[in-house]
Image 1 (cartoon, rainbow, N blue to C red):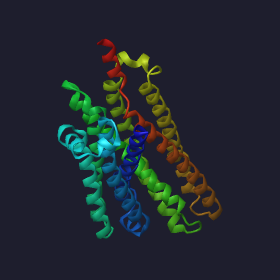
Image 2 (cartoon, one colour):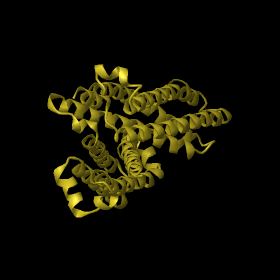
Image 3 (cartoon, one colour):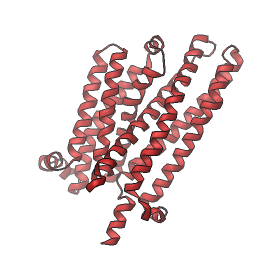
Image 4 (cartoon, one colour):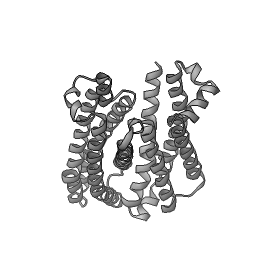
Amino acid sequence: MLELLVIGLRLAQYGGAVILLGTPLFLLYGLRSTDALAQTWPRRLLVAACAVVAVTSAAGLVAQTGVMAGSIVEGMKPASLGFMITGTTLGPAFLLRAGIALAALGLVLIARPSRLLWGILVVAGLGASASFAWTGHGAATQGAGHYPHMIGAILHSWAAALWLGALAALLIMTLRHRSGDSASDRVLHGALHGFSGVGTAAVAVLVLSGLVNSWFTVGVDGIDRLVTTPYGRLLLAKLALFGLMVALAASNRFHLTPDLAEALDDPDDIRSAVARLKRSLALETLIAVALLGVVAVMGTLAPVSAMDMDMGM
């Protein structure tokens, strides 16, 4: 039961962090300043994301301490928490993530929406997302591979947040879209067009950093054990989900976005184009949530390379 709690809290932290980084970044590059400032939903979304990251990071510290101490009751004791904070890299990472989220939450609540605010939130999101590297497998790699693995893990988390945070923003925009409003139609098309190139770059970084991470968590000798170990099977499931997301993203970019552009001057066509886009983005978002769930479980398992070491011993 405690392990399931840890997984659920990890998933919530991932979800909040990708929005904290990816959504304000999208507002900076995906929309014109006037169009971005006219949107009313970003503030509520960012408040929720910051609150979720802050609360679940603090709860995650207690839950992870409970796993190491043997029970949630032991995990809540000051001595156990003190050891986690001062004697491991996990504790400080949880506290850093919670602190960043709380600071970002206060800023969103008191400051007016602006490009400066979104830029500060992007920096906060970079810090929160990077902190996952210290609570993942990257921190466990020893020797010469430690820093390359950490860098790969950080880049992977940043690229994922860039993509998924923008995906959340695009889905909200399509759900709130007003049919027949030509200005709204053009803003939506501009947002999709603005994301297309950045999304391609994010996928490229995800692939490259994923290869780096797999070198350390699986290795050449562990490829044949991908189907025989829990971590390996989940990695294959993650790759399958990632492939589905890439296929949907490619369809959005090369088919649905051009269709939307062609339909801008026809009310009937625009409604149909937006409906197709809405279904595609909703499906892509569901797959993204499933993928983050898989990653949350993978973070609690020993990687294939660690099992190889145990077998060698």
